[in-house]
Image 1 (spheres, one colour):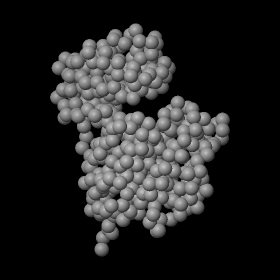
Image 2 (cartoon, rainbow, N blue to C red; image 1 turned 90 degrees about the vertical axis):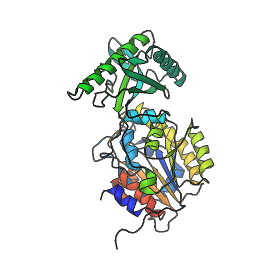
Image 3 (tube, rainbow, N blue to C red; image 1 turned 30 degrees about the vertical axis):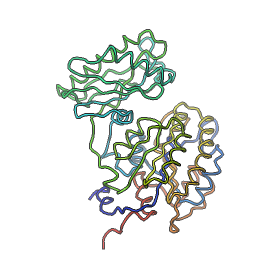
Image 4 (cartoon, rainbow, N blue to C red; image 1 turned 180 degrees about the horizontal axis):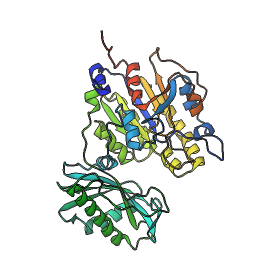
Length: 407
């Protein structure tokens, strides 16, 4: 019996409410200039107050020393083994943008980028606006609808991001990305990862697509190239309703997180554009018959990836005020954590453990008397260091949603 089968056998339906607040990339590492993490520098009295009344510790998203992507990091938070259920980022982006995939579809996510003399000088094309991206996608889609017998569908996303689908029965997902992941490098070739004739065909179609797009974009000052990654077919994954007997809803701004939530069975809210929209929507839905509220906040991750320590500190302080309003809703359990760490000093995701606080009305919940919501303080918490995939089962236990195991 694996962990999901165990949860399925023990889960109990009741009306207790869990809020899962995921502050993306919240964790950090000591910055060489400041000698501290962003959480250690920021003033966050509300997070501190909640930490003092919570079970606190650190969580490992995938495994020790493994740097997780957002997909594996979130799957773990929802109680799924991120190694067993490896889901391509393209599927998450496409679903999150409201596109209905078929079994013939190969999904991908893309960035507009800036290339000069064959070198990627900006992987995000200066973070062009969402409106610019929409216009560029319209321009490309009018020119490219099919390559050989492969239909092509493109969907604009937030800022420089977009997603798409190649549709044909011949397509395979075992192809390499062309994203070099760092500026100053040439884009990679789209290569087949095995000798299967359909895989080779797939790689050739995607290479031709990139070449045709480059010609269309050649006169653009910023967005003159595309980086594609996360090629994936639609996977099977058990739904949260089936496994945990939860009625979950997702409140997020960015498509990838909506796509992931949809994949595990959550109802999706589409009206949010800012964190304040998310807070308003959470308040509207809190008296509805949901019992699991996933709330995702993105900006801390973006600022960490930009290497902007000071702005990430400010964003944490802004989020702290929002946390107070979330707490005032009086959930039965409030979990505050992250899908992964994004230290500004590294300008990207990292393997560092993430802080996790589990606040509960249940009188049996241990109180840590932790003074500050920081990585160092949480390393001393009673929760210890656990795997992220264990957090949800604890939240369910403290809301009486798990039965006894065995006689």
